[in-house]
Length: 531
Image 1 (cartoon, rainbow, N blue to C red):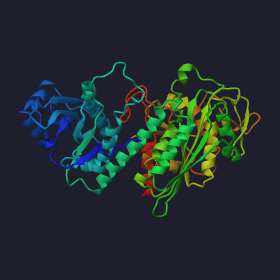
Image 2 (image 1 turned 180 degrees about the horizontal axis):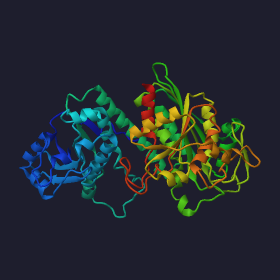
Image 3 (image 1 turned 90 degrees about the vertical axis):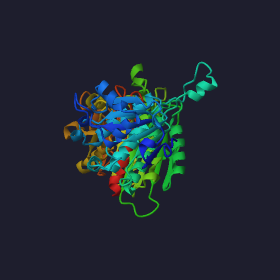
Image 4 (image 1 turned 45 degrees about the vertical axis):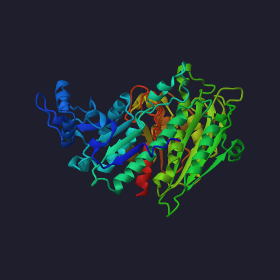
C-alpha cells in the first residue's frame, strides 16, 4: 500500500533559498497587462532579481498572459538554488472562487513538473506564502488540502508489469526518472496553524486510500479475483485501529439465503467472497451508523448475455465500487470519524459456463423477494440486492451503495459526473455537497414512480432484473436496488462513467487510468457527519 507521508511537506522557510529541481509560482492575469511591463508580486520580483531580470524579459518575449492553468518555464542557469522556475497562470483574481479551479491549476502545474523530470518540487500558490486576502477568502486549509491531493494523484502511473527489452546500463538506471519524489508547499508561518496541518494530513491520507483503490482496479482480473480482494481487505483491517473484518465464503452465504449473489457467482471457478468491514471509533460514542456497499464484480463478461469483445475489454473495472470501499477503509483510522461504519462487498465474477445463471431463471434473494432474470449482464444490481439487504440488516442510520452499474449513466453524464439517486432528498443533498466539495461531481437523477413498475412487475416473479428495457436505464437499475433497502435512508451512486476516464485527463486522474472515484467524497461525507 502506497505511503505518501514523506513525499509531501509544508515548509515555512524562504522558499527561494530552498533547493529544488523546480519552483512553482502562481501569477494572475491581472499582473500581466497586455503590452505593458509586468506587475510582479514581491515573491516573483525576488525570483526575477535572482535570475538577473531574465524572468521579466522572458515573460514579455513569450507574451505570457497568466491565463488559467497555462505555464511558462525558465531555467535559473545556476543562478539560484532552484534549477527551474515554473510560472503557472491563475487567471483573473476576481474569477478565482472555488476549489475546482485550484485543482485545475495545480494539476496543470504538477503534470508540467513531471514532464520536466523534476524530482524535488517547491510550490508557492494562492497567497499561502503571504497570508494574503486571497488565501483567507478561499479558506487556506482547504486550498492546502486541494493542492496536497492533486499533487499526489495527478501523475499516477502503473508500471508493475512493464519489462525492458534491452538490458539497461548502470548509468541509465541511475539517470532514469522515476517520478516526483518530494513536494514542498510553502505556507506563511501565520497560516500554518493546527487546522491547516490537519487538512494537509487528511489530504495525504486520502490519496493513499485513492491509490490503493486504483491499484485494485488496474490489476488484471487473473490477479484481482474475489479472493485477492478479501486478502487485501484482511491486510487493511490489521493495519487500522477500530476496524474489524469478517469474510464469508460460499457456504456461509448460502446459509444466509443469498440466492441472488450466489447465482451470479455460479458461472465462475473463482469462489465468491462476502467482505464485511466494521469500524467503531476507539474513543467516544459514535454519532451515527453509516453503511457503505461497493459493487464487487472482479470481471464481467456479461455471463450468458455475453458482452461484445470491445465492451468486455476493461471489465476488470466492474469492481471499482468495491475498490473505493477498500481504499476508504484502508485509511479510516487516520481520519478518525466519530461514526460506526459497516462496509460490505459481495465479490464475484460474472462468467458464462454450463453452471452459469440463465435468462429466464427465477432467483430468490436474501430478502425473500424473487426476481426473474431477463439479462445476465445486469448482474451488478442482482449482487447488490443481497449485499444491500445484508447491510440494512446491520441497522444503519443510512446506506450508500457505489457501483459501476449502467452504460446509460455514461450516455447521460459522460465522464464528468457520477449519477446520484436516492429515496431521501436530505441525505441526497448531504452526499452531493460532500462529493462536490471533494472535487468528485455528482448529479441527481429522479426516481419517478412511473419508472418503478418496469422492474417491480415480473411476469412470473416479484421483479425483473433488467426492467422492461429501452428507457431510463440508470433509474431502472437504482429502482431495482431500492426494493431491498426498506425504509432506510439510501443513496445510490452510479460511477460507470467516472471510474476510468478515457477521453481526457481529470484534475486527479490521467486519462486511461482508474480514478478511485468515491474515496475523496466518502471522506468528506464522513467528516461532515462527525461534526
